Amino acid sequence: MPHSTLAPLTTLRLGGPVGDILNLADPDDWLELVRTIGDRQEDAPLTLGHGSNVVASDTGNEGTVAVMNTRGIAVKRMDDDTVAATVQAGHPLADLVQWAAAEHLAGIECLAGIPGTTGAAPVQNVGAYGQQISDALDHLTVWDWDMGRLRTLPAQACHLRHRHSRFKNHPGRWTILTTTFHLTRSPAAPIGYQPLADELGLHLGVRPPVAEVTAAVLANRCRRGLLLDPHGPDAHQAGSVFLNPPVTAAQAACWSAAGCPVHTDSDGQLRASAGWLLEHIGYRPGYKIAAGIQCSNRRTLTLTAHDGATATGFAQALTELSAQVKIATGIRLQPEPVLVGTWP
Image (cartoon, rainbow, N blue to C red):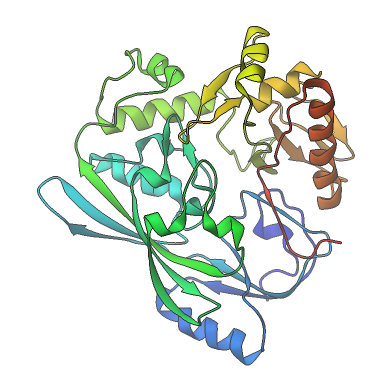
């Protein structure tokens, strides 16, 4: 057994014992993994990619953990300008974006530097700088544990919206095996996010070359402390710990006047800056929140785990921070990392 706990399977490096770990590196071995789980008379396994958006329980997970380490991109030409890129679930999303930039293929260029696997990306409908996975996703190949068979889910069947999908409503029912994107050989999508336009030195609406946008996104993420350095002091983290919260028009007007950045998301919902709200109530980069848990040295919205940290303590810190913001502002923060394993 390569690991005895969930901790090494997550970027937070927290989590208790596991029953067994099945590492899937060859896509052709998937049906064998399914048979193994069936022989054990287990339910669907806990499936992990890089574990970059999860808090794994101190209690661990009694059943099987399936780790998706499959890699590869298969390209099919659709027409003169469009290709279908089918990507294995364990392929790092950051590597996929860099490949697309090198091939001058537009559609995912603003997702540069986001940690995690491509197969995990639709679950959260990850996005950044005005772009999200749903903009280019065509369909998924999944294993349906309820039906016991492979299925193809078109993008519209995934109910993708701002940081949400049907996979979040029914965790464990489907395991994503491949994702297929339609990418176009063209300039990047029109720049619709002001900080990215500023990074590029361009006006909103301009369409620069794809590689320039990807490089600008990486530079901006680096400057804002949004790149995961596996060897840095903030290495043990799960990225932004809260979603930017939805607000009413009245709340938006009130807090915007106070200096809080407010934007409209892809679903037309007004959202306030979670990081600003945390700083408004007194938190700052490097602030110690609980035993072994603190705000990262670069940004308040990322919490990092150090000696003495526990998953329970981390989850409690999120609950307490959300409650403090609610009391001070009337706005509720929703944690972004997903709790996995067995929780009391």
